[in-house]
Image 1: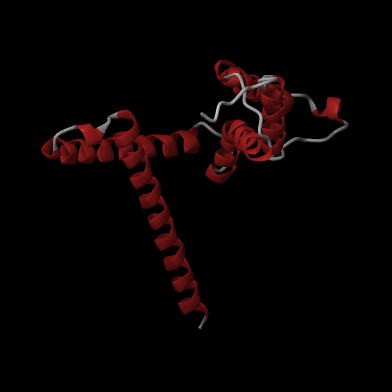
Image 2: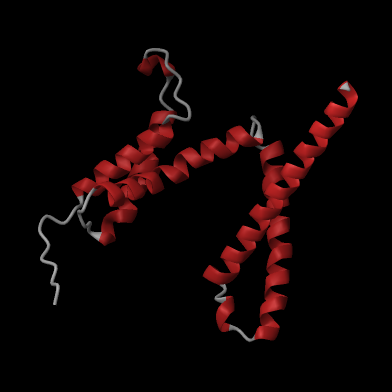
Length: 167
């Protein structure tokens, strides 16, 4: 029973990995074609060719990213992805939370500045020596801190008074 369970488990892991990689590749291809290449505005004959080429290029890009994680980073891929997510999803978390929990409008021209300041603050916090933090090593908790910094920044650039016309 042990070997059969082991083989079944490994096959399940492989199937899940392929399914996940395929979904990610399809999502990247679709997003790039629609958002950046405006594929919907091109002739039907060109759409298929563009989509297939983009799929091949995205496959290559995914391979390059995996190789970079393997040889450049000194940790595993999951840890690397979570670390990158700490920096990239923090501002998204703050923007989402601000939009859901407040009714304020913000000065749109400054939102990117808030996001950049938030990320740079987190980079600074992540690189602080542990001695400055009483021996504490920061990790994935930087994500909610990043979101909080973004939320506070958005609060600081809110529009004080708005007259919304219903006419």
